[in-house]
Amino acid sequence: MLATCEALKTDNTAVKNATVIATVNVDGVAYDVEGQPTGKSLVLKTDDAGKVLVKFKLPAKIEVGQANLAVNFSDGANNETLSRSIPIVLKKLKVEFFPEGGDLVVGLPNRVYFQARTTLGKPADLKGAILEDGKPLPVEVATLNDEKEPGVNQGMGRFDITPKAGAKYELRVDSPVGIEEKYTLPALREDGVVLSIADGVVKPDQPIKVAVRAPSRAISWWVCIAAAGCSTRCAWRRARPRPR
View 1 (spheres, rainbow, N blue to C red):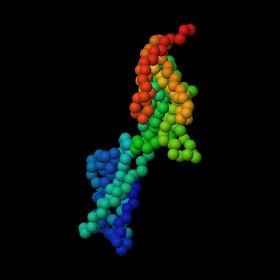
View 2 (cartoon, rainbow, N blue to C red):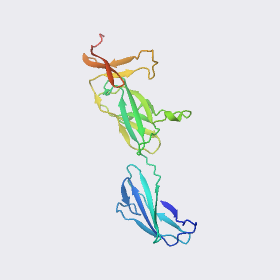
View 3 (cartoon, rainbow, N blue to C red):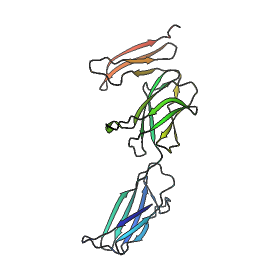
View 4 (cartoon, rainbow, N blue to C red):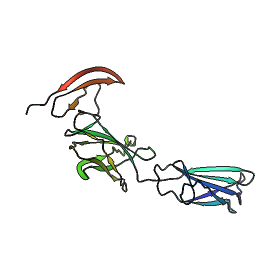
């Protein structure tokens, strides 16, 4: 990478032959001009125009991508430091999965919410496919995106899946291109319950319809309704297999 820096006095005249110390920091580690974590700074001099060209390499492996270049100018009487961020675009995303009922239960329809972020924690858009033992399923996976309302673009989305026992499920990212990592869905459970709410938005005077599904055997669970973090009503419920 190349960075051109210039040092001027208050009267706009060039700071000639000034000592320049350049330091590259990536993800909290200081690197030398060859991209090695030695912590050595690059020592240069400004030319007759007060300019200096800083040339350096980034490390081969970058986890987060939070990087900056600090350049210190000294002419013997004055000492000034200039720091600027280094723009780095990594082919990496952080993806988290949130099954609506808390678990992925085998043999039942499960709704899964997900959130995609960059390595710096900012919302990211993605499109991809769910893989079942390495083979793509006909499940559309994409973050919510609205060009007219950019405020809704928070790197979030959802999809529905009915997992099979013993299968491995992963998310393959097709867009942005170049991301080779596969993101594994949460572990499957062969027991438990699946909870889902049919309507994402409900008016104040309308009931909230909740579907609770369980495997084909008798099971009991504790149901609580909470508002603003406070439980308003709790009760035991028991499901039995439906007659065939």
